[in-house]
Image (tube, rainbow, N blue to C red; front, side, top):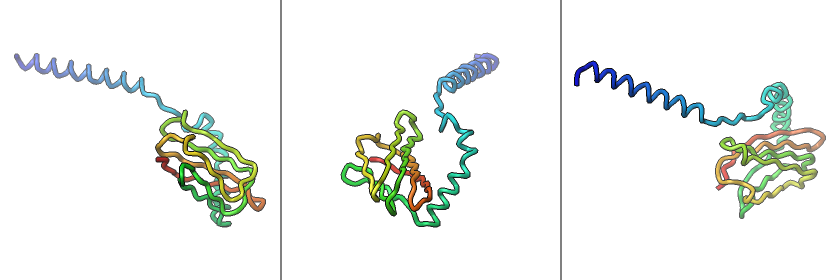
Length: 140
C-alpha cells in the first residue's frame, strides 16, 4: 500500500468521524433553564432584594431528609409559600408546591422526588416582608 492510499484512507476516516459527530450533536436535546429566561432576568433585582431581606432578618429555610420526608424548616411562621423543586438534568422531574400558611415546618414525602440533585427555590412572606432562598439538595 503506497503513501497516497494511506493518506486518502486517513482523510476518509476523518471525514466519516466528523460527519458522525455532527449527526450526534444535532440529535442531542438541550432543555432551557426556563422558557421565559429574559423576563426572569429583568425581574432578578427583586430576587436580590428578597435574598438580602432573608440575610438581614435571619430568615433561613433549612432543608433536610428525615424518615422518608423532605423537611423544610422555617425560622418563623411563613405565609404565601411558593416552592420550586428544580431538577437541572430533567425538566420533567421538576415540580412546584404552594402553601398558604406554614407553621415553621413543611414535610414533603420523598416519593415525589427522583433520586439525584435538586435546586430548591423557596419564596415566602413573614413579618410583612418577602424572602427568597435557593439551596442545592440531593435526594437519595
